[in-house]
Length: 282
Ligand SMILES: Nc1ncnc2c1ncn2[C@@H]1O[C@H](COP(=O)(O)OP(=O)(O)OP(=O)(O)O)[C@@H](O)[C@H]1O
Ligand SMILES: CC(C)(CO)[C@@H](O)C(=O)[O-]
Ligand code: BAL
Image (cartoon, rainbow, N blue to C red; front, side, top):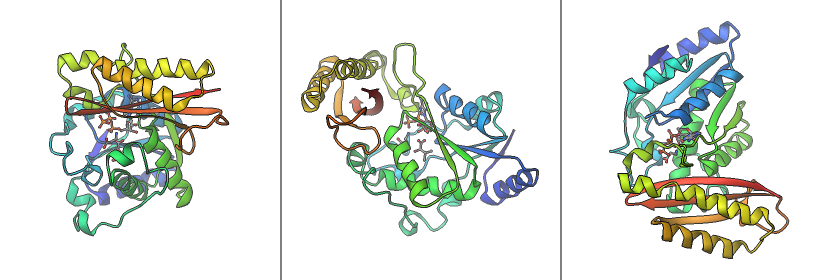
């Protein structure tokens, strides 16, 4: 497995694979890899001959008061895990390689509508940062397929729309959320949690499941269900950011006509912000 840091070297290596008619799968990450990421690498390996994993903590998607500086950077450990998972190439550029003119002069990709609300409301500019860097990664790697986790449900929706709207020739594959034994979605940010908060964190998924069961049983008083879920989160020791029941495709508030509903949740434990979601069909 090779690691490259420059776009030029990345392109040279990928040109060689393309000349051999190999298909290319891309897994964009911010590093500090866990089993969730590794499941994406394996999925990409099933769908393509060559797997490129990018590791880049993208400053453009972080707000001024967020954790850009403290976000864990663990390249050596990440490389070991990727090698064991059968990854072919690691692309780990530095910030100057990706944004040579600086962020203020960077062309931006805006994906309207599905970027609004939920995490888009709580993290202004976040999805513009994600959409821009993912578009750039698609142009740098020109993958046949790209794999993203369903854990970041709104992000996956934004990327699917971006690919459709800009006619980018890549197949976007969603991968199911990998969880700890107690239900907590695996996330790099779980490592920020104190022992006490780690004990509280699984309540997020438990409350998603409880609400999912109420919906499956036929309840359709969505606003009341959202309030009950937020109240249960407070009781458990979480500080809810949002708990929204939405149409799984549009991410707009659920209606009685919707057959697929997604419960989107974000909550704080101390200063750590965690997200999760659950989709219910009825
Ligand atoms: N538990 C998981 N199961 C499946 N995919 C995941 C999981 N966690 C992250 N991913 C996916 O891995 C890709 C890279 O995500 P990222 O590097 O932000 O990891 P993360 O652990 O979610 O980090 P963070 O804590 O910053 O949200 C994204 O497509 C994301 O959806
Ligand atoms: C897709 C992504 C790698 C873009 O920086 C990031 O948002 C992430 O890790 O989910
Ligand atoms: N997993 C999404 C990346 C972020 O939170 O910025």
